[in-house]
Picture 1 (cartoon, one colour):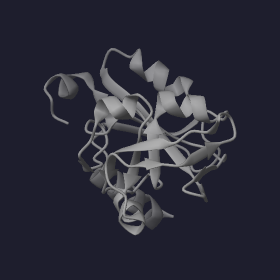
Picture 2 (cartoon, helix red, strand yellow; picture 1 turned 180 degrees about the vertical axis):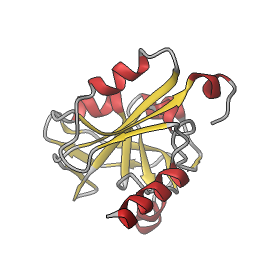
Picture 3 (tube, helix red, strand yellow; picture 1 turned 90 degrees about the vertical axis):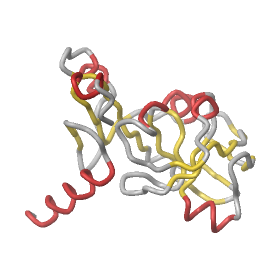
Picture 4 (tube, one colour; picture 1 turned 60 degrees about the vertical axis):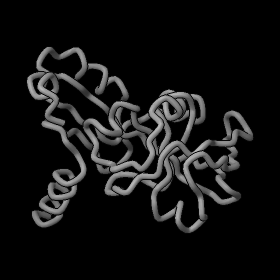
Length: 171
């Protein structure tokens, strides 16, 4: 058990630029946790990673889609995204893992077919290709987009940065 905890700590240190991490191994927790952290004066930024047991069909295959906030991409999370279009991400685009993009010969700007149980067919524009996959699946959308595409809304990680470090730009 101690070695598993150490392994998780190493992954977090390598992938996350946060002072505080809240997580759960199963089931997720209320999205209100992130909102409550944002109200704490000592917290400069808080973001979450949202997963769902619901699946989508992307490029004809079952896929898991994760969600984060646009400001987390190059803030509290160290994703190393190539050609990141923050506005495109915030308005419904998708980040794709480098391994998946290479396997499919996809590039930033490509439109990939996707189907969701809540909205039906909704193609996604690739707005960035990310390298770091420690906490994420192959597809990542903004939380606002995720809320439109999936009924289940549960966070599995919340990351927070101290207000002093955030104001100093130490992310």
